[in-house]
Image 1 (cartoon, rainbow, N blue to C red):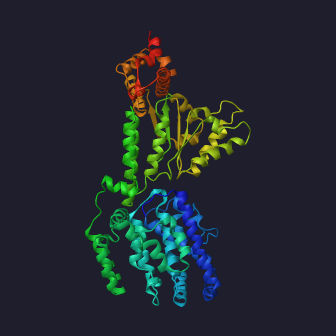
Image 2: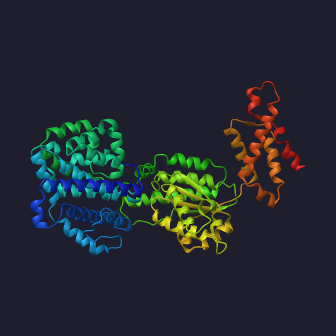
Image 3: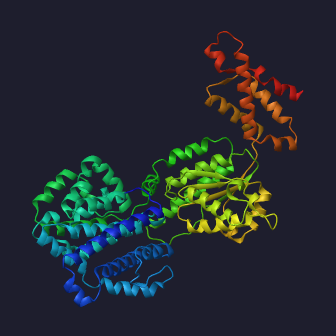
Length: 561
């Protein structure tokens, strides 16, 4: 269960699992199992469910030291009744005391589901428990976190209520520590709720379909990788899977549970937390392709300072993940950026690459880049601009919204709707702060004035990356890279001629040239001239088709003269 999910996905999955739990409550009421409990509690099963889930999630968050605004919003969003009077603004101490008090009560829903399971030879208690775990994991994974503390709490929670999840009539429907291990190592959080529904009350079927069969497909290598993320909950169990399975089947249930408990305690005391290596960090955040993307970054021509800034940002995020492993306080970070510099200096290329890197680091759900400018955000009539901005932002959620020449949004008069676009953008940035990164780009001085046009911009954009103009040598290298990518060879001396042309430019001409954009124009003109030259020949060899000759840039030489 190492995939990184966006907060939006986690909210959705938690909501789906909660609705499934509500269906179990409705079943208890319909079949008459809740009648006696209602006479005592004077509450509907859905009301008890909400109190139970909200109080459990509060205790869970406090244990993991993460009862922040995001966790409060997550808990409050699960239900409309708010039985715990819980909102994102509720005082921590007050709500924790109420949650802890309720958690000390017997888990009546589990008790009644277990009773029903004995009478109907079913496994609804196990499926209900699995749904609870899914919601807890959704909360644990908010903001891309993966924490050992969360896994430890799941073990504590199971130890507390495990006695209510045994099925004396049919042990295969019971919840045990073997299932917990499989759930953490092989469970698919995204598909779990669907499998619960398809199981139709058969927990044994759910385990075989959703969890146990994956052992044969994924093997112990994946289990070992997951263990690096989830701690040492069942570390030794993965050493020899087949041998342990035989032992497990032969031992009595009580003996197995006691032995596994002792084994877990031994692992936790004898194996202190080790220092995370780079490989551990990549596994922890699920960034399988991060190294490839950083190599792609290094392969870009020039941009030395830009590369340093991006690598520093990646290192900050890595350290943030390592701090989470040790349950240290969370460091707030802003991922929005301001790219400053002249046109053609690689800003769009890097914005696209940043989206991919953020996706690998678990900051964004898909990392695709959506590019726009003033024309894509500002309308000509009152009220239309906000709708236009909302449409663009919603399209970009999960990735990077790249606004080129963003300074053009700054209002220049009373009838300019650029200010409305900025106000709407600032609000939507806050609404989607967990799964959207905005990168604004433009000339250095103009961007400074743009940020001052709205106080909300200044507070959200605190990472500035300057893109200097390319040197002559770098521009020639970019030209050679374009030719190589197209399968073309530049004739000897041709690069010197291009360099000579670039060196003759004054400041105004260089500004108009457009850096890499100007080089792209030169390259495309060379290709056209080559085509015009070759089409006059009756037969062309491969060498002739792939060679760019000096005469293909004769127009540049004329400009130099």
